[in-house]
Length: 95
Length: 488
Image 1 (tube, rainbow over the protein chains, first blue to last red):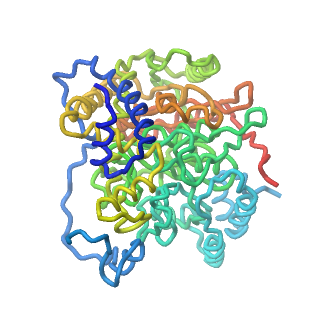
Image 2 (cartoon, rainbow over the protein chains, first blue to last red):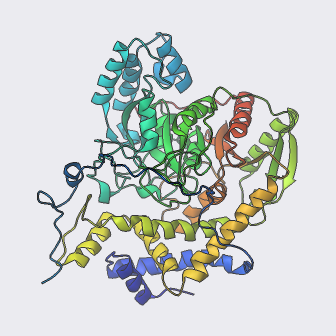
Image 3 (cartoon, rainbow over the protein chains, first blue to last red):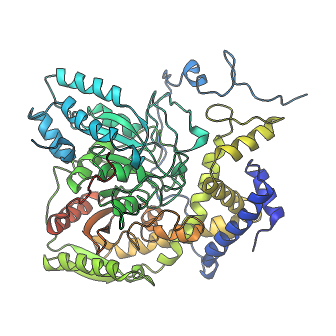
């Protein structure tokens, strides 16, 4: 499998990263070399192997449903690039 | 008079507890060096005034009973520190001030350690040379014929800061070797604990099933002490493990008699420099001469570890980094509508390597390719884990080199992502299998550059790892040869 410029454009849309034509050329070369490298895995027969998402055998635990005063609105909003008293401000979504 | 900044962490704390020096004097000794070391570019943020006032506060407290009392500690700029800028060395977080503290750093301050700053790294911990940082290269205190070398990565600022005595110890993060490889390049000790040993809460996430925080220190005892403090179950991290609290430092024993040490033949890679192969043989000889039982073992899927890693890590990264959208915090670039604002923010806010990995990760998770790449990698990851499970039926620890080469020059690998990725060839398996591993400096090569060996341990058996490393450390008697050439 290899990636062409159209695929780069498609992935950049999915990843929400705009790319210039120059970047597309570079990404086409780099991504294909990385894909060629990872394609070694195809040589392995893994039909009977279970996929693992994590090595952790920790089971999810229950916790008390209690209110904790952390991450208060006023503090959190201080990091926002654009805000008014109570809200984040973003470019207009609905005309 | 003793140069306080040259003391190990354990010695520094002893000095303070025995009132041989005050916390202010210790902090002052480090600050004096930090102020003359801007050339190394270890720090993204310095917090020297706060450090001074915290030290004064400790000096007025007669108790001095906390585990890390008075120890000045800078941490990788990936740990959220309340009220202190946390950037992950990225433009996109360049103005982010967390409103909360990461669990592991909170544990440090609870033991009266003193924050002195935030350390440079590769952007979002993606890199092996610290060259992807938005805030410039970090220099290795060791040089090759007066030419600058990389400190390794991603915890490059951490590694250089410990080697140059700019922090009494530090914590880094290790997703594919980011603690151990830079530790090896700078002649210090780096420990990646078992996955789940330390909480990941409040650490800027890269690849959540692989990320683990761990100590980077001047010697093995310091690593044991730091692990004592930062480890433990945390209800805020669902993968942190419920293990009884033990004291690694108090339990440390210098003895390898009867220890079964595995030597995996697959780590004898093509084109490995002779000096690295010889180093490995020396390590084997030290253990064998002192009563350890050396066993040749096989980890047959080793060569598939890097390709597996370069599917899984970018896949998880593409998901974790989706949160950086210019809305709630960090950098924003304007756009004519919401989507264009997202796309411009992420395009201008992330660097080349981070974008490369997000793109690869997005591709391997996308419809039609998920099974061929991501699911396949998850299966091979299991095979790699099974390799270790089988090996540990016969051995207690596994000995390998940490890296295939010593520290290299700037620009040497930046144009070829695969060449850069090969740096992690010996370290990445520990992350995929979730195992603890430690890098330990052994000797200098003919050019005066540090060379290091790595030990892998069984899951949650950091104690055997630390015992073995401590024994080897005493045998090889590695001493810092850093010469302060950067100071004006």
